[in-house]
Image 1 (cartoon, rainbow, N blue to C red):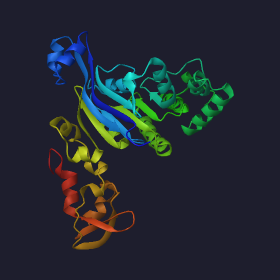
Image 2: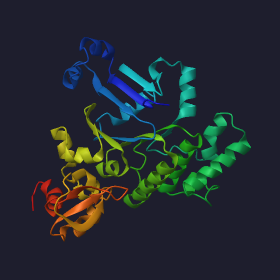
Image 3: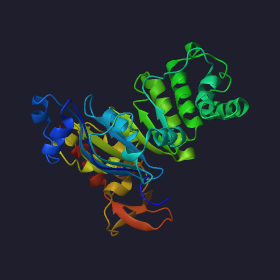
Length: 342
């Protein structure tokens, strides 16, 4: 299928008794303050974007920025006040209840911050449950659930009850359960934020491993910028219901579109985010002997480059020289973007 898997056009979600009338009267120019004075709260304000097949779009913002509301509109757990939402070309807002239930059961997987496991069912029964709702035979659903247990690394714990698992293990069951129905589209709303930092990092690594294998189309919500940088193909940063910037992690760090985004990225250690390719020059003169791959994260090669007198050659995947990087550029990238220049 060509074209985006998810497409939003001018999506609004406004809470309040006269939300639709106010939206109509505003001609799409929604001012949150004015709406608030009239008893409405703006959850999502004119969101337009696309998510490609196999892409992971991370939506981030502080509490109350509208990120979860946006996700709820796209899964139609809540109805948008205005705009259009397409899932694989189907107009989501035109679907009747039966088609919507089919779409959710067969195409969408959802994982929320609360694990919502059934306490009286074992791990494998929890994972098999959505398959049984779909009418899959018990035997087949258990067999599929066991595959999922292995996939998320819970072998040997399939007969445990939720209360016998740690928070990280419970979250893995939630992830396995949502994957059991083989969704094409996966919605995750702050799935790791209840976990302690070490387990959270493990879950992020596990999640990247799963995504490399499964290539799902994902919308992932977080308020943690480090998590967004680690996981995202692209990041959307939201504030007061508006998408302030939607771009690659490198572009958001290098070229923040608004003052708000700049503040978000100010403390980010650039060398952990940017690749050599993001900051290299196209020139190929006066090169030393050292060569570095365009795909290297700056942090991993900075020390080597800083010991060179001359510029360093940057090579592509076929070992062709495609540009150069000067030691001064590394110093400027690492220290130049900070508030207190060293």
